[in-house]
Image (cartoon, rainbow over all chains, first blue to last red; front, top):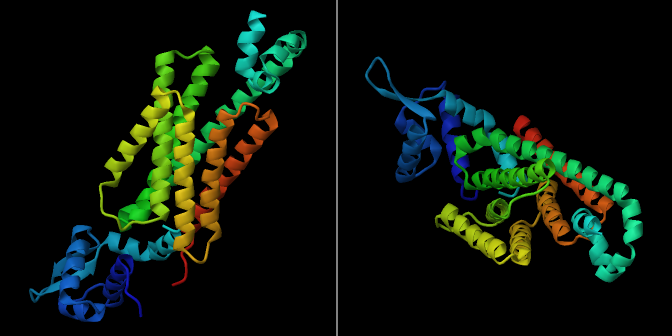
Length: 90
Length: 250
């Protein structure tokens, strides 16, 4: 498998969260994303800053990560965006 | 005589360049006889250019705003340059439209405002091609693209306008276009139809410039160029909208 590009990594992370009923703890997310902890931390900061994901504290005071509306829109639009980039050789 | 030497070359300059000034003088009588027809063509051509500019402005701005969400979501450099290409293209056409509007409404344009308009047109057109070239070639060079592109476009515009040399402008546009085509093709082994249409669009944009330089271009050819350009713009718009509507299976 070749090196994943930035857009694809973001898609994979968001997809993992969505597939886990939109709530996942940071450690399983790191494990499932197949990234080094350093890369994961960088992507995670970017996702928080761009408001694709948000941290939610549950009743046991544990942090969970959920998708925002923008995160869902990214997942929805991803295929179109990739197709667009390929079509126009961007 | 004053009427013909002043108006005919303006409306139908190919007469002067094709036949030479001496021959043209000998043909004054025929020219005056054909004046209504010639002026009619000039007027029709102005109207066509007027509507052509309006259509292209609308399409370019539509593409720019339609791809906004895509860029907001990804921050992808290629998409940003694609959008900038159409934004600057629309600005170039707006300036072209204003020049035409001024010419049609007031029949004359002051030298100062003509220079400013020409400067803006060359600047916007060069910016558009710089972004096109960069969008299809490389996104890995790290430099302040906006600053470098603006500076380059400004230098080309200043040389073209102050030196009254449209060749500099045409040559720079042609070089940028060739650069985009050669490197764009080299980057991809398998070419997509959409990319070819995108490149053709700029080829006809260049033909449009060349038509300004070559006054012997016939009325029909000029109109044909505009029609092909509009068709290419519509095709690009259709491809963008189609892609935005239907995602590709992963």
